[in-house]
Structures are given as structure tokens and as C-alpha cells.
Length: 417
Image (cartoon, rainbow, N blue to C red; front, side, top):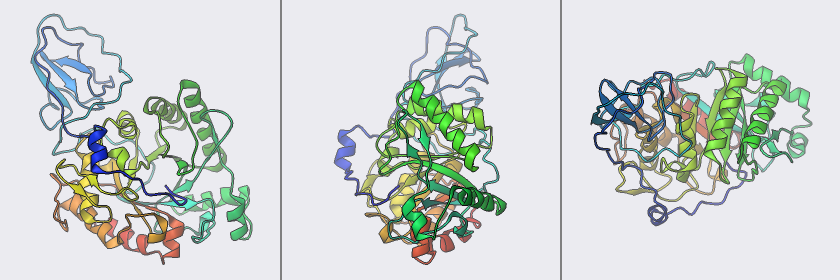
């Protein structure tokens, strides 16, 4: 998410060279002995094995409480490896920390139960509020238009302690709005809560330097974010680390935060487009590994150039309807529930280096994904009525542009299935 981000030079050739194929996975042969018995309480990730009713199964992605006997096959979470023999161990396997492998396409989403996310609507609009001034409309938090359901405060600041973050109101912003204190900011969060809105703290951004690369940093991250939540009233955290992340330790940090904050914790992610091209990428791996507590992924469908779609046959140009629908289905076909997928777009041509498209195109893409209508030349392999909604960078740029994004997209979200 960008203060003024450069265009990411990602090409199809680079994707091929980097092994970004999304959709191929092998099927193991029948095992001579039965794997450990499947457990409904055990967390399994891609590559884990389990046995049930005399068959061995291999998980394709993160899963919990999805019976292999009823959730196996080409289009489901478990691969049936055939009849097994011998004694079946009763101790479930230890979940490894390896990155989930690439999976085969699916025509329906996994059937895990979504985590609690407070009072967010079924389909909702997210906007980033700029805690800095860059020419876009300067706003106090309470001045955010009411069309936004979730407001991400951009950004938390790194500290001298690895993994730890803090928050400081930007003096430049304060000067633009006639002064802004911590007390006023906290009161504004309370005001948004009184309107039924949620407010989260975003970590990262183009210039963000937060790094969670070991267990100590993970603990520091969880403790410091929880401290910000209790100090200011934030409802959760947004992960927008654009300079790399360690999926293993960030997952650990977020699970620790969830344990502290409880079931209503909102966890969102804002990966760049290239970060969600393959299940082997660190961002995609993180999303799958925390699927049981993840609220939504707002992929930034801009500043990227052309990218491969879920058909694995064509490169789609940013700034087009096909780009949104062909790339969003990579996530829905590879382990994330539709309610965990949202479309991230710039609010105006000034908000990004490239990839802007009209709010009407965003609405058409949502229709295409949810209903199979208003599609371009690309039509996704399935419909996803639960598609979560949309995000824009940023609220400030949208206000500068006459609130075109929020005023067009928010009313349309209420028409989705």
C-alpha cells in the first residue's frame, strides 16, 4: 500500500522463471501401512497424511475438522491415496512448518466454518486512512465517510526492538487538520465504533521496515500489536509487508495475538498481486496457514503489470475487468474461502502508479465472481457468492476524487448474494 509506490516490474517470463505455476500437484500411490488416524481437532497443512476407514489421505492445503472420507477427490481438500493396511496409529501427526505446496484447481470452496469477525457485514468495503500527508485530502479519523465498513490506519511504526511496532500520529497530518492529539485520535476510533465501523492498524506499507523473522520477534509483534489495541481501541491488524515476510513466524505471531485478543480479532492482509500468484509464495502460504483465523485478503490488483490468471494460459493486463476476475479465482481455487477474498483497487489515478480502473469495473468484477454475470472475455470456473467485497487505497484519495469509489462500490455490495 502506497505512499507513492513504484510499479512492480512483474512479467509472465519472470513468473515462469520463478516457478510461479499455481495448479499442479501429484497424487500419491496407495500406502503399504495406514498413516496416523485422522483427528477432527488436528490441524493439517498441505502434505500431511492421515487415514480413515481403511484409506490413506493427503491434505492439499490447511484443514481442520474436514473428514477425509467426505472431503476427498479432485475438487476437495483431501487426496484419497487408496486402501491402506496394517495397524493404524492413533496419534495425529505434528504439523510441519513447511510452506503449503501448490494445489489443483477446485470448483467449490473448502467448507470450513469462517472465524468470528465482529460485526462486519457479509460483503463490506475497506479503506486505508493515511496517517501522513501526500497531497490527498487530509482527514481526521472521525471524518471518514460512513460508506466504509472497515478502516485500516496506515501505518504502524517499527521500533528498535525486532518485531515490535508502535503508533505515532504524523506531525505533517496534524498540521494539515489544525492539530491532532492522541486523545482526539482515540476518541475518533470510539466515534467510528459508535457508527458500527471497525478500525484496524496496518503494519508495513511501501516504506515499512517491520520484520518478524524469529520466535522472539513474533512474540514482540504480538505483544506490541495487542498493546496498541488496548491503548487505542483497534479491532485488529492488517499485514501489508511489502519488503518480504516470514510466513512461519508471522503465523506464530498472529496466532499468539488471537489468543490474547479473542475470537473477534480482525486479521486482514494486503499482498501485492505477485504475492498471490502461487501457493508457494510466503504471503499465500501465510494466508493458508492461518485460514481458520483470517478475516480477508485484500490483494492489491494494481502496480503490477500483466499477470497470469487461474486458467494458467493467459496473461491479463492490469486495469481491466479480466485482470480482476482471472486473478481473484487463483485464491478461491487454491484453498481460501470466497469470504476471505476481496478486490483491492486504487481510488484514483493519483493513488497508484498503474492499474486504476473505474468503480463500475469493480462492480462488474464482483458480479462476475459472485453470480457469473457482467464478465469480460474471461469467466471464472465457478461462482463465488460469498466473495467478501472490495478495498481501496485510499480513503483520502477517494475523498479527493469526490468519493467516487465508495459511493459506487458500497451500494453495490448490498446487492450481492
